Image 1 (cartoon, rainbow, N blue to C red):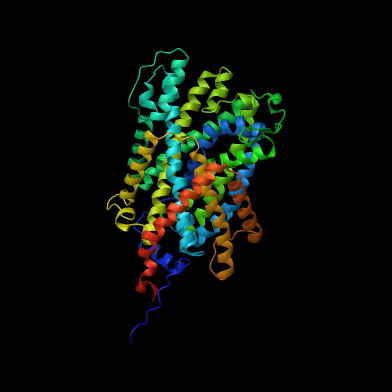
Image 2 (image 1 turned 45 degrees about the vertical axis):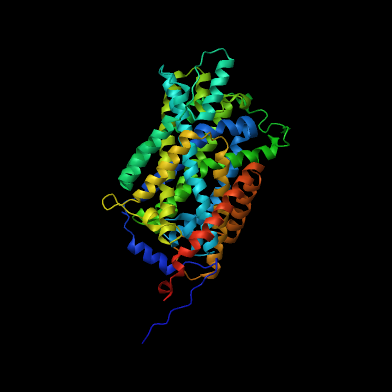
Amino acid sequence: METKLKPVDTSVWRKKPLAAYEADMKKSELKRVLTRWSLTSLGIGAVIGGGVFVLTGIAANEWAGPALALAFVMAGVACAFAALCYAEFASILPVEGSAYAYSYGTVGEIFAWLIGWNLILEYMMGATTVAVSWSGYFEKLLHLVGINPPIWLMNDPVTAQEKAEKLRAAGENIPDFSFAVNLPAFLIVWCVTYVLVKGIKEAASTNNAIVILKVATVIFVIVAGAFYVDAANWTPFIPEPVIDKGGQQHYGFNGIVTAAGIVFFAYIGFDAVSTQAGEAINPKKDVPFAIIASLIICTVLYILVSLVLTGMVKYDALDLKAPVAQAFADQGLTWAVYLITIAAIAGLTSVMLVMMLGQTRIFLGMAKDGLLPKNLFASIHPTFKTPWKSTILVGAIVSIVAALTPIDKVSELCSSGTLLAFAMICGAVWLLRVREPNLERPYKTPALPLVATLGILANLYLMYNLRTDTKISFLIWCSLGLVVYFLYSRKHSHLNKPEDHL
């Protein structure tokens, strides 16, 4: 008897059958080597880094004042709603692809594509931002040991010229240069790329060692810094609102909300745990645990660090580039500055590692569905069992952009893509609960209607309060993504193949 093919759904709202995810898991060539605590460590590795060592200075100095702790609470709560929803999805669909994969099975292809496209902002551009921050701390370490490399070797062309002009204006003799490159940022990205190509077990082991160092350092900052806190620096806890020339409010409630949108970049690593589901030993139980555990641990540490930091130094005197190290330098604790700078370098390295790792797994999930070229993005190395071509491509793009581009506001652009993805996930898990009430759920989000609603509203609210030019840039990026989808991805989707619909 001849098998009758089901008609092909050509709608942009078509969904990937849940049975197809199960088939993907069985065919996966990735090694399942990650334990519950390895996954939690990956989450902490992605989260603790730029938020503590870089963004705290900007957010407190320019936007929130001592109320930076409230900004971290606000961002953490918005993340918590999304994390609970992520955890339920991860227990149902323990596959690589994160929010992209979850949306494809519930909301539809066009939404899944847009989320996957926006996750590029989160992971790849996030890694680029961190690489530039890493270079800044590395340069600070070189200065601490008496090495002063030329400006043109440590900065992108635009930043190098700006720094040279400032130094010349201050009376320093800076020679002219026609070429500049951020060499440290370029090289560290390729070091991370090498580790990622070599294998997930090696990457996890490297990350675990770094996580132990930087968590110990963060705890040191909290405990040691507490002895130098002056409660007078917390007054007023919420500074009076100030309106700048562009009409933007600094301080006050709106300033705290803006600061929350800025430091939100510091939280975007926890969802990287879900991208590693394909390499977890027991993904249905361990991935939800790791998502929630890493977020709770990091939120508590962030709040404590922000209170100590704004207690050690008056908020308007905080250094914008290396606030934690500078706070201890102001207290005459030079030895602590060395420790914090080294820990920052290590911490930012692990953030890069997890972000680039997450990006390649997002690409892998999209390529398996036909939305990206499979021979490039889903090619698994026969020995290392990693998506090596994709990893090298990501390394090449991140290293070149980090070496040649001045990146000052890109963290907000990264946050905008993440905030939309989080809001979508909150809606998608609720939608799936209604459509598939009998589906096995090893982990169920408590009070889902309330959690999902608050998650959608909180993330969209933070997104709305980002700067206007950030929102415009985000709309341009989304438009470019739609062009790619309609020109390539929709035509090559595996859902176009009748044999997949038997």
